[in-house]
Length: 270
Image (cartoon, rainbow, N blue to C red; front, side, top):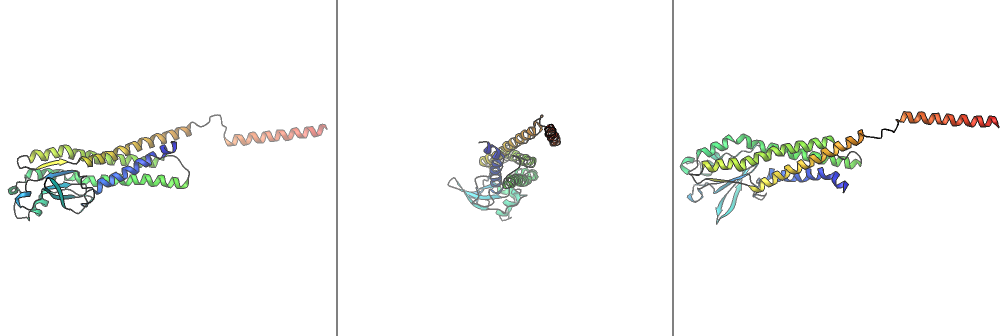
């Protein structure tokens, strides 16, 4: 059980690493957990033969578009992925409609395009934060693996603790941004699209994954911190009565000389 506790920070880093990669690469292809989207924008133009799709699902590094068929969402295709991805609805909708009609005539509110534009820098940063979070989690695992290969060393090192803390901060920032998008930004889009029939909804699966990864990194950081402090305290509280090696050597030397002198006196008496 104690050995399992020693590996707990590494286990949490591993699971958080996997979850972070899933958050990062979700939606980069149609087959990669398409349900784990940040948010989905539902348009009102699918049945009007405008070329605009029924919905657009947004992810960290891409977006996917599709149509509503008998109440089910059928993905048509996904965009190219980019670490600095930001969804530009005006460019996407004009491309889908063939660039022949103004978006206002298709019932798309300009206010929603302005909302996405104002939030573009924030969404671009998410890919960077997730990448750093996954990277430092991997570093923490590599450091632990190197210590295990040597079969010696501390239970946790300051470098591992630092990597876990940085990972927690990066994933925490990303999760906060995702939460703001899920609630405040989605409400903003719904407010501006109410008269045009444009709706937005957040992805609960993505929120669950990103906050689970953040929570695991927090637990791993706390456990690692406690191990480092405990081990340092145990080193500082070493046996106070144990004399240094030089004193031990001097005592042994004196004892040896005394014993030798005593043997010489006995021979002299005989």
